[in-house]
Image (tube, rainbow, N blue to C red; front, side, top):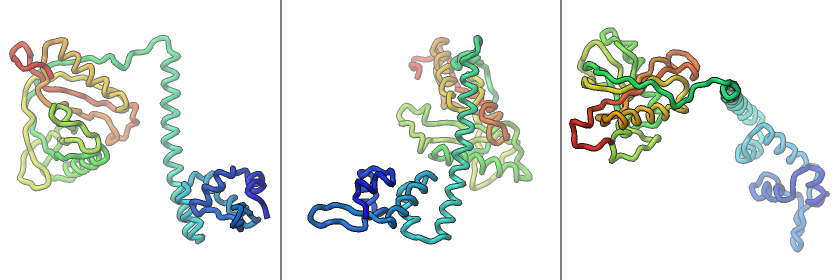
Amino acid sequence: MYTIGNFSKISKVSPRMLRYYEKMGLLRPKYVEKESGYRYYTEEEMYVISMIKKLRRYHFSLKEIKSIMDRNESQYTKEMMEAQISRLLQSASEFHTIISELKKEIRVLNSAHFSSPHEFDIMIGNRREQLVLCAREKASIDHLNHMISNLIQFVDSSDTIVATGAYMVIFHDIYDIFEVFNPASSDVEVCIPVNTELEMEKYYFRKIEDGLYISTTYFGNYDLIGNAYVALLKWARENHYMIAGPPIERFFKDEWTNCSPDEYVTEISFPVKNIEQFDTPLK
């Protein structure tokens, strides 16, 4: 038998970690002296620690490893490994995307000429009234994507309703000064411009009012989209306009048009009013 010190050297696992595995019920010494508490291991425990190390290298959590070893069933182990392969492939794809973006950032930094992400062209103009089909909920970002998908599929499958423009999302609680913005439960309204209005239960029709809007176009993934909001609010403040309603994001190119995140095209707009005509301070 091996003392914990010798077993640690042979297995290349620290005594502290061996005790932690013992506490978790993953690896128990073959024998523990009652008086001294000395722990002794055998070749059988060496096989167990080798399995733990291998499964850790496969990026299984200790909880998952314990489940595999407690069950000790080849079919269950196979299923766990197949699921892990799927997770690792997904992670590999995500890391590949991140690496590509990092390389692009390096190329930009190495270039002598590049535009600042804070530079946006701001446009102002009147928009006419627009009929839209809508769904509004308190939703997380993940559920928002589900809302968008359902609404697009509903319009695409309709024999009567026809989309007349790009879909949009209105973020109501960004404008509401009494509402704390919570990305896990944001007050969002998904809208698609349509040609006609019908009676229905699941969705509702309404008209987005005409009026004066400021807008800018944001290109690329959504990591830096906040800069576009800052540019719009700064322009409004410097040109004596007050924000008169929640922001609208209109999606011209995104995941639904099968393009990469770097090719996304999003218009962000705010309804505004000339502040000189009102006593209300700019929000």
